[in-house]
Structure formats: C-alpha cells, structure tokens
Length: 236
Length: 236
Image (cartoon, rainbow over all chains, first blue to last red; front, top):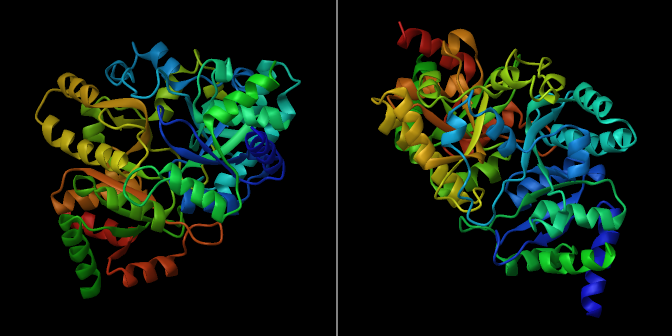
C-alpha cells in the first residue's frame, strides 16, 4: 500500500515536471503500455522519444468538457450521423472492437503554423499549442472557443485527438481516461500526449519489458488499476 | 541519362521484389523523403523498419479509381459536405497548407482481424489485406466492392488512406501520386505503404542523409522529377 501511494505521488510529481510516465491499461483490455506526458511540456525531443522508444501512434488526449467546448465530435458518432450521405461509413462501422465498445478518436489536427505537420518540431507545436488553447478558452463561451480553435488549428491534420468518456474512469478505463484522470489529480491542463510502446516481435511491448524500460530510464510505471484506485479516493 | 533510366528501372524491380524505395518529392514542396513499398508485400518487419528508420506517419496510398470503387471520400471534401451539421469543420478548414492546395487524406481504417490496430502485426495485416482487397474488387461493381470492403475493414482505425489525384502527376506531385505512378509502371496492385523519414534535429531527414541511408541499405533513392519524367514517357 505504501509502495502504491508512492508510485502515484511520484507519477504526479513527474507529470508536473514535464517527464514521461508509463501507463499499462490492463491484461483484460489492450494489454498495452503508453508512454505519456502532459501536452503543455511537449518539446521536439519528446516526439523523438515517443517515435523511437514508443513506436505506436502519437496522439493527443483531452477531456469531454474540453471537447464539448471546442465542439469536437467523436468520429464514430459523427460517422453515424452522416452515413446516409456517405453509406461506406455504414459498411465500415466499428462494431467489433475486441477490447472495448467504443472508439475514443475525434478529429486529426495540425497547428496552422506547422509546415508538413509530421516533423518532431511540427508535432510538438501542435500538441503544446493545444494545451495552451485549453488555458485560453476555458472561461469563454463554447461558440467563441470553437472559433479560436479554428483560427489556430486545421483539420484534416496529423495528430489524432482522443476524447475521454464523459464520466471518465467510471465509464471507460482506456489510456485516454487514465491519462486525463492523472492530469486532473496533478492539477495540470487536461491535455495529454503519448504513444503506444511496441516490442521487437511485432506485438506490443510486454509489461515486463515496459517495467524494465521505466527502471532503466528512471520513469514511473503505473497500472490502470492503481490509477482507478487513486482516482476513487481523490474524486470523493 | 543512362544513370536516370537505370534508377527508375532498378526501383521498379525493387518494388516488384517487395523492397523499400526512397522517394524525395521536391525542394519546392514538402522537401521530405518517404520510405515506401508495395502494400501487397508488407510484413510486420516492414512496419518496424518504417517506424524505426522513418519515424513519420505510417500510411496507405491508393489510386482515385480504387477510392471511387470503395466509395472512399477525401476527408476535406467530406468535411465540406457536412459542415452545416458540424460547424467546427468550417472553423478548421485547411485552406492554408503551405506546400499544396489540397490534402490527400481519406478515412483511417483497421482490418477487422486486428486487435488494437497499432502493433506491427496489426498494421501490416491492414496494409497487406487492403492490397488483396483491391485484387478482389477490381472487376466488381462499385456498390458490391464497398460492401466487401466493409466486411473486412472498420473505420475509425489507425491507418490513414491517402488517395492520389484523379489525373495523377498531371494534377498533383505529392508522394501519393509519385508512389501510385511507380506501382502502375511496375504493374503492381495500386496500393502503396510508407512513412516519412525524420532527422535527428526535429526536422525532416535531409536529402543528403536520405541518399546516404539508401546507399547504406542498398536501396534506390528517387526524386519526384525523375518519376514525373519516366511517367510522361510511359503513359504516352
């Protein structure tokens, strides 16, 4: 128990310092470890670490409150709304995700100051400015927030935004919800940046190798259930 | 001139063997080199090379004919059609891409047999099966082709499909058009898989370093203008 509290507290301290933390969801879910950090601290060097040591999809995460303010839809819901006009979306409906009932993907964006959108400099700019945007819009009305969003970002772009479920960990226990809960407990802007960690054998990095990576790089490794436990106490 | 013909011929031979080739678009466009291959030969090991030696976005490319058959829309056009329902898409309109007038992105897909969709095994399955699908549907009517597409793939997913311009290199000289032209000249299924190559300094890999990588790995490096020239002769 002491060890568990220490882990969460250290992870919160690391997030506040702009360090990466490692989050493994659950043996019964994806069974994947994501290398994540608070978006407000992302630098070009952070993207390089994500792509070299992670290797999965480099993505942004935010809360449902912020997504509502920015009028960001879940893609799956949007596709559902427009599938009379685009019947292929009906054919491709993602009703068979093996580990979950819904996809958390929203739009893919680039900051308007990026060039191709994909270099480390460009991806870090998109991520960091997204966190800054949240700070700017949080006290504005929704329509105005969406307009500011549009002056600074374009879509289609290269960075997917994953949106946490409305009731966070009470509703879904994916990486997006785990990360947003950690950021809330840390008192940071609710925008995370991260990447899944891949192994050398074509599969996700094993939990054992993720723990070893964390140890070798002086980073904290957390399991989803530890965050769920801490969140229950914190949010009471 | 001899050297130039040899380069194109060697690249075509390499594509047929399932090897990577390197394509640099143009100093006046993105100025990026993509590491690309024919999707029909993609293996988990290919994805590992793309993410470790490339580092950009791992994506599929196909022709406009195939996109039409599969009812795959350009995202930018789709967003334009639905922006009354989703006004945020009007705000985010990508009218300021510095190197081009339009985005070639279509939907993001996963093969339905994938698990998370992001491991090397999963991404290679999505890519390889997409190339196989093209072989299956090319003589079917469009509505039936789209239904087969939907039985095998879901969207949202992790692999973006970039669709070449209708008139290929006569219309646009992006990596997507360059790759599809090469595959047509090679007589291969019009589906390419690739990834932008990143440098160590936060920017795209320089042309010089891309040439060095090609030499070190016994791969062919081509510039967009060489492909445009060869395509003009071939398509006459």
